[in-house]
Image 1: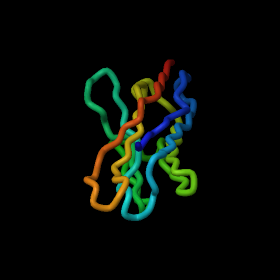
Image 2: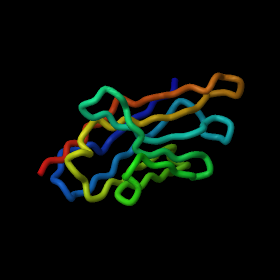
Image 3: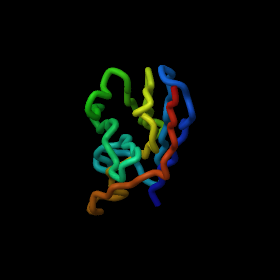
Image 4: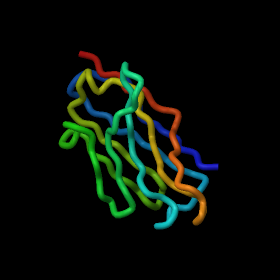
Amino acid sequence: QVQLVESGGDSVQTGESLRLSCTASGMSFNWYNWDTMGWYRQGLAEQRDLVATINLHSITVYGDSLKGRFTISRDSVKNTVYLQMENLKAEDTGVYYCHLRGRPHIGDPWTDYWGQGTQVTVSS
């Protein structure tokens, strides 16, 4: 069973930094098993907005206006992605969800997996 375990959420002041981690388990991470891994966040609205993703070739995609403050990276040995967040603002407050698009075995359908979420609160 694929599981995503997040950590690093906290309450901070504006301008401070945080690093989120997400470790995946339950499947191998070969070239045919996963597509992208990354982060989405949910604020007061119900939808989850893209924060950042990284793919097998380390190509990154960021949500609007986040590149420059946020940096996504991955450790392929640890099956972990990190989100380094700098100069945090109040509007960055929300629940950050780890996401993986993968398949445990060749022939399985591509599936979107989600973590439980980790709360980030930024106050002035």
